[in-house]
Image (tube, rainbow, N blue to C red; front, side, top):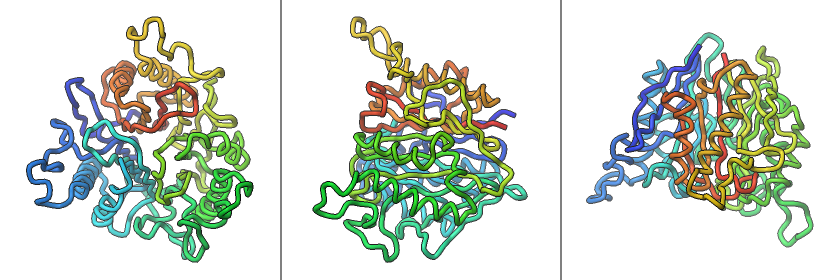
Length: 431
C-alpha cells in the first residue's frame, strides 16, 4: 500500500514539490507547516508591513493561519483537530511561544496532544517565526486517541497538553525537561534533584544529572501511566543546548537503554532554547504498550550510527523509525561528502551528504520491507539554510519528482559528526 500526498503545492522558482500532508493507512502526517500562502512566501497579511499593528499581533496571526492549514489538511484526509496525537513546534525565539500556545488552546480546547517546543535559528521561509509538525489518526475501532491525566504528572501550566496519550498500542509522551513540578524544590525553575547545588563545582556532571532525572522521574512515571516501560520505547528525539554534552548525554542514555533501545535523534538547539531557561536537554518519546500485540523490531542494514549503542532503525507495527542520519561511516564524515579544497565550486557537500543519507535510509527501508518512497515525515536539520536546495534536489531524484513531506530547520553547529552540516530524522510507512 502506498502513501497519499495531501494538498501538494509547488514552491518558488526552484519548483519545490512540497506535500503539506501525507495520509498513510490510519495515520496522517503534517510536516513543516508555516504561515505561507505558497505563492509569495509568508502570507502578506501576516506581516502587514504598511499597518503592522492594526490587527492581531503578528505571531498570533501566524499561529492562526498554521492551524487553519492543519485543519484543512486533516479535512482532506477525513480527520479533524480532535484526531491529533502529537505536535512539534520550532520557533525562532522563545518570545514566539506564548502567542502560539494561546492560539493552540483556542483551536484545540482541552484536547491538546503531547507536544515539544524548541527554539531554533531559522526556517526555509524568511519572516516565519513558527514551524509546526503534527501527527493525527484516522479513527478505527481500537484506534482512537485517549488523553491520559495524573494528579502528580503535569504538563507545563501554560501549555495545557496531556502528559501522555495512547492510540492503539502506541504511547505518545510530550517533551520532558527538568522543570520543577508541583511542590518539587527548584533552583531557577529546575528541580533541585536535577542539578548540582549552587556553589558546588564537583557535585557531578550537569548534563548527566539532568538526563538521569528526566529518564527516571519524568519519562518512566509517564510511561507507567500508559501501561508502558523504558524497554518499550521505539523512538526518541533529544534536544541539547550545548554540543559539548553529546558524549556525556549518551553515556547516561546507553546505561538505561543499551543496544535494545529506541531509534534516536540527537539535535542541537540554541542556547536557552528550552522552556526552562537554564535547562540543557529536552526529550520526547514514542513507545508501545507493554501488553499490546505490537512489538518493536530492530533493523540492521549495516549503516553506521552517530552514537555508540544507537540502533539504526526500529520497526513498530506499520511504522519504521530511523535514527538521526548523517553522512558518516566508521571514520567520520564520508570522504565523498566533503568539499574538495582543490575544486571547491565543482560540487555541493550538502547535496553529497543528502545523497549518502538517503542511500542509507533506503537500505534501512529495504531491510524493513518498505521503500523510501513511503517516507511520511522528513525533518531536515541544517547548520546553514542555504544548503536546502541541493538537498531537496536529491529527494527530487530519488522520489522521481513526487511531493516531499519535508520540514527544514536551521540549527546551531556543530552536529555530533564533525564537518557534517545535515542531519535527517525520517519516519517511513511500513505496512
